[in-house]
Structure formats: C-alpha cells, structure tokens
Length: 199
Image 1 (cartoon, rainbow, N blue to C red):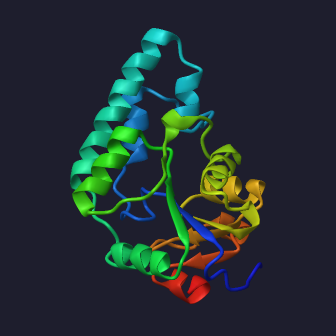
Image 2: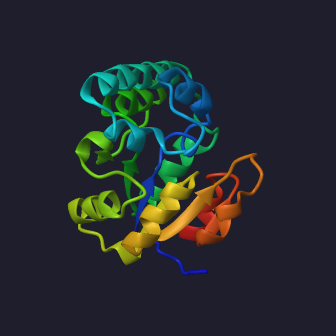
C-alpha cells in the first residue's frame, strides 16, 4: 500500500459512473439489447470495436440512448460536490476521466453543478484500462503520475492508474468488496474518506 499526504502537489482524477454518481447502469441489459454473448465475455466498448460498421452503428445508438437516459436520472453520491470542492480548496488539481461519451459526461456535470478543468472521455483517445488517458491528463495538467490519484469504482480504473504509475483508490459505496480490491492502494466506501488521505 502506498501512503503519504499529497496536499498541495497532487492531482485527483475521478471516474464518473459509480464514483461521483451512484451506480445507474444495467450493463447486462445493455449487453442483451445489443446482442452481445455471455461467453466469451468482452466489455461493451471493446466489443463495439470488433463489429462490422452497420452492426456497430446500431450498437452505438443503443449505448448512447442508455447513456442519455442515465445522464438525466443519475444521482450523485451525497458528498461528491463537497469533496471535489474541498480537494480543490486544498490546492489539488482535479479532472474527470470516464469511458462515457462526452455528451453524457457534460450533461451529468451540468445537471449537478459540477465542473472540471479537464473532462477526458472516450472520444479523446484510448480508454481505461490502458494507462494512456491517465498519462494524457497528467501531461495536460503538468502533474507527474506519481503525484496523481485515480479514483474509480471498477477494475479498469485501477488497471489504468496502476499502469500509469499513479496511486489508485477504489470507491465501492455500499457494494461488497470485489475480488480485485487488492489491486487498489486504498479502498473507500464514501468519497469523504479521500479528505483524510489527501487533505
């Protein structure tokens, strides 16, 4: 486990769905509607990359519809706005780093009165679990990965942050502790726990 206080010289990159917002996607339902097989299992975005053009357009339309519906109905975790504000007040840089679409991310932020200097979505290049998005945002903020914290609710967030050389925080809310939790430097149930780590 890595530790240490990063006050004033660190950046915090937040995932969106399930991290800043409460879980709001039924991924199994999306997969069924698209027609993805249960076996072999493949993440939705990666499966879309392998589809013929016509099939991919249909699948993307389904995914975008589900994302738009979620953007209009999702709720933030109760402490999300305060935590982001207090981290910034402590001098930490912040960014949003999501596999979601830009349209959906911007709608969620607008609905809930949140903003980030950098919003990195799947339209901006390689996606998590690759390290590329973390490294790209580090370059934009001029912050080294070693002083960056990646906060997310899923394995891909941890893999992306770890591969980039960042510290990783797994946000699990009220869910059971997942089997991949040991890949995180820290596991939290509430975003407010970040304040004890960083402020």
